[in-house]
Structure formats: structure tokens, C-alpha cells
Image 1 (cartoon, helix red, strand yellow):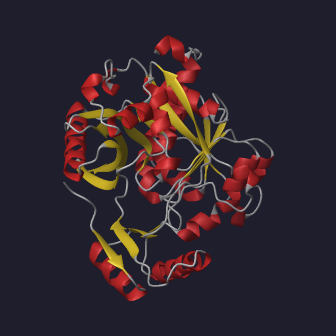
Image 2 (cartoon, one colour; image 1 turned 90 degrees about the horizontal axis):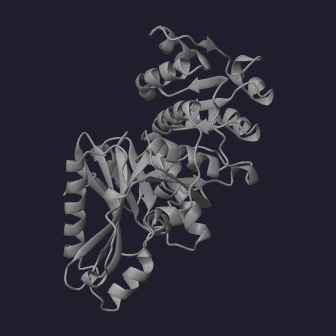
Length: 393
């Protein structure tokens, strides 16, 4: 099994040496936190010292010694992330309750990622290999009961990110998706029952529908919090959409989270350089289904050079009329904005806050944007149907 290159540092000098050896960007965090607290993606060496100053403030507030270790991992850019929940009994039988394919790329905290059961794009041979590695880990760690594993896939290579010999926050979603009381089952197993004693354990791969989890965020109540998703968890709840098709289930999850996907109007595009190639297909689809496009200078030029019709709009620093003016006038119906380094995050922060204030749907990852646009295309063709959970199981 593989895992991202990593190291443990106790001071800035050790962290610098490890990061140079691993190569930037690196995923960095204190060793004692949950929920991704103080977890950050560091893209350049000059940001390491800034991170250490921030981490020390966390240590001080929690009365943690300053020599507490810092964990560094190579950040797998544009990798696909997965969650696996399984149960192992005393006879070494293993039941895989679900494999969840994340919609946002690895690096977004699992609690803040949308995800699907069953996986919506993975090939069967990849799923089988994930199952094999999951079972092997459960056996080697001798876990009796429930266990959660997080994987990432990059360039067809599978990496183990994290193993938790306990119930994860994914369990309610898996249980609601399948209709199986996962916690009750795991409790019986811990008390000595065998998995073979339980009948009708559903195979998540054979469910006749897709379930999509969407996190719910409290951004409107916290004015100084950026809406960008990252390695530090910000969501305070989650909803679920179910449908026979993945895209319809995703659309339902957005509605459940209070996101009203538009079916017409104007879309603002501004993405980091690494996402521009993938944005081309998204932009073409938006035009094909009837949207008009506007964007910042760099994104507009890139798309125009590829014969895509889009109009330039000023950044805030370039003066009115700019994107925030249009948001305040409710003249933008959808925002796709991805960013990378701290400077560009800061430059576009006011725009993202006004997106939130104006109740404009927004997507801050290119994968999330692609799935959202594909779901909008489905919504233009048909109305969503409502079914009860009892009708499903």
C-alpha cells in the first residue's frame, strides 16, 4: 500500500527540511487536532513560518506544549478522495457498508465534501482494489467493529490517507443511504455477534439509486469566514439527495442545502490557471444550455482564445462596474471561482462574501462546478420527483 510522502517536525527548521524533501505543496497540521483545525495547504516555503506562528496561537489557547509535533504530507493535487466504512467481526468476516466517492478533490476536509454512494465515476476494478486494501487494513489492525478509511487516487495510484478504528461522521449518511442500522450492527459485532448471523446486508454497489451528501455551512452567521472549502472543516450539518440518477440526486442535495440551481441567466467565471483547461468544457456546456458568460481578464482571455463567447468584467481593484456591483444588483445567477495561494484568496474574498449575501449559488472547486453544471442541464430537461425512503427500503 502507498501513502503520500510525509514527515514529523518539532520546529520550523525541521519542517523546512521535510517540506523541501517532499516538495511543495504540502499539507501541514498539528498532531492533536480534530476536524482539520489549523490544517493548511502550504504552497511556498515563505508561508511555513506564517503557519508556525498561527499554529502556536492554537497551542497557547489549548495549553499545549510548544514542542508538540507538526505533521507534513505531500499534498496530492487534483486527486480523487474516497471514504470507506466497514465492519469486521471476530471470525475475520468483513462487511463493507459503503464506499463514498467525493465530488470535490482531495484536500477538502471530508466533512466539507459532497460525496456519493455508490461511487458515481469509479471503474469496477478500482472499487475492487479499494475493497481489497480496506479488508487488508482491517485484518492487520485487528479491528473488531466499525472502521473508517480515507483513500486518494492520483494518476491511477491509490494512496491511504487516514485510518480511523472507530465510527466516522460518515456513518449516518451510509445508514440513511442503505436503510441498514450500521451502528446497531457494529455494536452487536463488538459484543461478540458474527456478521453471518445477520441476513439481508445490502451490497452498496447494487443499490438501485444514488445518494449524495451535501454539507451545510453557517457562513451567513459568521461574517469574517471565507466560503472557500479547504482542509479545515467549516460545515455544521449535512443533507442528502436520493434519485435513480447521480446528477438528479446531486441536484436534490443542493436544494436540500438551500442552493437554488439556476436554469438560465448569467454566470461569472474566474478560476486559477490549473483549472482553466477543465473550465473549457464547463463553459461550452453553459453556453449550449442557454447561459451567458462573464469573467475576469485572465479567464476571459483564455476562453476567448478557444472561441468561447464571454465578456470581461472588472475586478474590484479595477473599478466599477465590477463583479460585486453586478452581484449586489442580482445580475449574476451563478458563480464559479477557484483560487490557490493566499494572495489570490484575499483578492477575491469580497466577491465571495457578496455572492453569499446575494444568495447567488457558487462553486469554489472545479469538480464541484462541473457536477453542478451537469445537474443544471438535467434540471432543464425534466422535473425532479420526490419519493419516500420507505419506498426505497
